[in-house]
Image 1: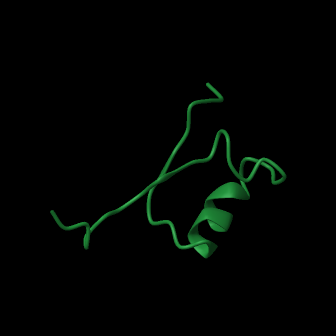
Image 2: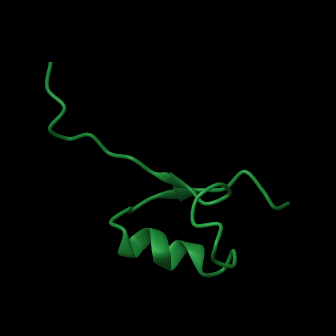
Image 3: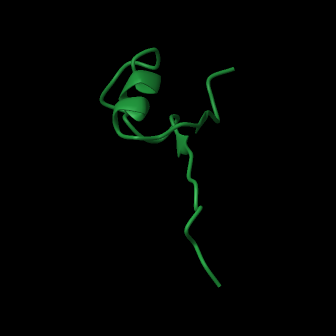
Length: 42
């Protein structure tokens, strides 16, 4: 069983909370993430 192509996304509702919501996608990209998700706000 290989995990050579393992990919992760980051949940911006619970990570990078020290930043405003609009700044979080750039922080996630800078950390190497290529996909994000949000639980809130709506």
